[in-house]
Image (cartoon, rainbow, N blue to C red):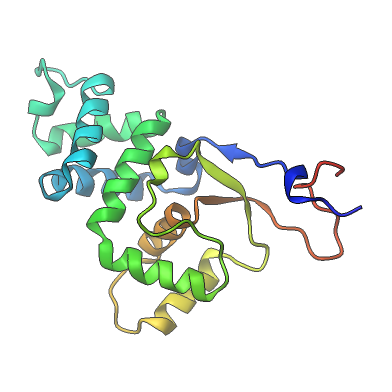
Length: 190
């Protein structure tokens, strides 16, 4: 019996599960660049990161962690990023905002490839985390090659493109969609 829309179960991984898919160097780069660019971000994003930083990040010699220079805040903020889903969501939203051109290009590419996406301006920080089901026919290498083909000469690392794919799609490649002949683990009867 085919599953109806109401029979589907949706699983989420908390936002900080992303850390299993990132190298420590790239994670630190994302955090450092986001902190360095805070003043250029919309107030609501800046305030969200500052509030979480005040709560989660402690820096020796500073009563208020926000007073510390970015060079001193990066490491403890990166450590908090590894543990706190709200901080991950806030940092990624700010990171995506600061890479608006890349965000638009990746969004357009994913739409052309048939991905189901929230609108570009949706507040993804309000989601409970990342969906766990990834399209079986997709992988980061293939998406990165398609990105290079679609935007030759555009300078973006594969890490940046891949992270933008994860953020915009709200998905981590944890489980894969079933083939048409396989029973779906998304349905109630599976």
